[in-house]
Image (cartoon, rainbow over the protein chains, first blue to last red):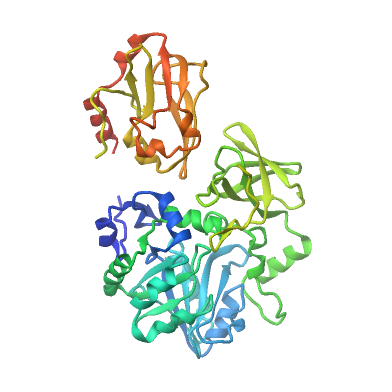
Length: 367
Length: 130
């Protein structure tokens, strides 16, 4: 048995009676009692997530922008204001997704990326290899702890607890950050609610966590994190896409910046080719109004062949099951059938966004 | 540690059975089982009047996390199902041994009850599994 890595908040999770599980080699909280209650807390008030297993990577040097414009499928030249961020895929030569990440422009020739825990090691190796051809330095920053505070009350509850010089975080637009020499506060998240993601020195994490808790911000585990992001229509790397996935078949076309024809980036050629040829699959949202739960792997029947659920769960906010599914591209039917343990249940095809800022984004069956 | 009442019988697959005064038995899942499953969202019990056979899947409980089969602890005819669970499946989480019961059976062979575990044997079984 290998020893699991732990975050600076491991003690806090144990004190709170968390059910701890192995997540990508890290011992992380799945829930602290009830996943369902945690989910609802984030939609209705505020919750906090330990996401310290995610990896911060700083990119610095005269050619930082040129490097990132070649490394990433989205275009960092869009970042015109210091502190602004964008979501991007990092593609391989075949156009498959190595990882998805958020990249901040921290001014001058400096950028900061946050990448997934499960892929961090490979990501950094890839970045450093590509960086060999540029005058740039790629530096992992494992010394940070990361805490996401999310929900309609997240901002008001968090602001008074931030360092004095970062209270301006309250005025941040989405996908923007402020920082000092130790802390970094961004208005980002993975739940479809307002809130912050805070990077802070590991040794201050436990104290900040306890202050948030005292302010009424409840700890939330990875279980609710998954149902929240699914409802919000956000992909999960390794589940909804991986290094074999064409991002155009994973609802990620909007993140691929092809506008600047002069810009070469890794994976550009195969993506452009698949744009011309047309992709064979697309990702849709599904709603199961009946009793049953769509899960990853559930087979979806269409007139043009089978599709498959990539992420599916019961939606605690909506009281029905929702899912992302990859189906044959030409299928336009508004209703398909899911094969749930041998039973064929009707599912509605919808845009894959189910809840935003606490509000349902789909029509719900009347009870 | 989850509780396992002394007056019940248990299966290895984490169902419990209570012998009622009228000769029928009530079936549910244990506290340990509901803890493993997490928040339940749907319960599909067998229909009243149907026959079930000991050791075969006869119901499904579905949590946010996963779907799980329920195995009939005893053969017989289903005489009642817990209708409350249709709207409030969380009762299984909140009260697995009382309000969260799943269905009642009229056993075709009450002798099958003797093959089930008592609370101590079940506790040892849970211990060995974890």
